[in-house]
Amino acid sequence: MDHEPITIDVEGRSVTASPGRSIIEAVWEAGHVHVQGVGCLGGVCGSCRAIIRRADSTEVKMVLACETLIEAGMQVTFVPFLERLSDHPYQIDSFKDTWQLVSQVNQTFPEAAHCRHCGGCDSACPKGIKVERGVNLAVEGQLGAAGDIFETCIMCNLCSHICPEFIDPNHLGLLVRRVVPSLVVRPFNLMQRLNQLERGELYFDYEAPEASTEERD
Ligand code: SF4
Ligand code: SF4
Image (tube, rainbow, N blue to C red; front, top):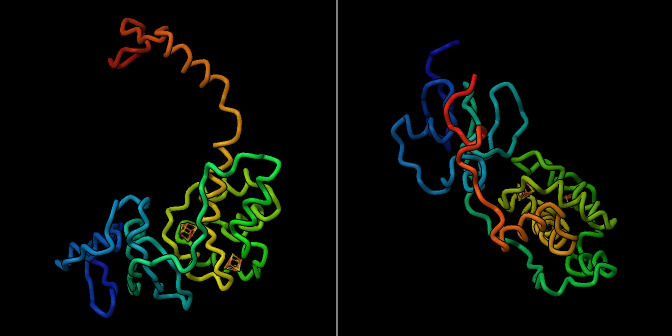
């Protein structure tokens, strides 16, 4: 492995750091103070949105700076916190009638039916989510499949900002992820376990071989 330091460009500043560093780690290693837009450092909170361009490419990409490793010649610009551009208020308790569920979701996000299939949301997503597909599935009424697509969404709002139809794709995804589990029958095993717990029938057998923390052969 090459251990030579790597130099990148961060918002016009030259930053040199060890290989294997994420963009944020590199900025810190180079001695720069950078706290705004830094959150979990684990690719979950979506705070450290950044636009990068690699040395050998003309393509610009949205990434999370905490999980993107530096490469020689990489150019980086951080993207500040993004407010939502549109609002789609709803009360989750109002979604009661499963026969009306699809139309109610579509009434809450009426712009979703006007998706232009431009793919802008897919390009903007730093988590590689097929956002357009998720929006289209929700409009078609395939709410479970749509919710699955948005499972790793970190609500960074980048797709919302790029969407020319103000669809608010991530919030549509959040709605279907909330509403579907709130209406489907709970898993039978879980209900049984909760019932056992209420009756005081669940206990932990500390003597069981599986309970031992010692290494097994
Ligand atoms: S908010 Fe949009 S761009 Fe950000 S992770 Fe979720 S789907 Fe991707
Ligand atoms: S950016 Fe908006 S209009 Fe374009 S594909 Fe995504 S959801 Fe559809």
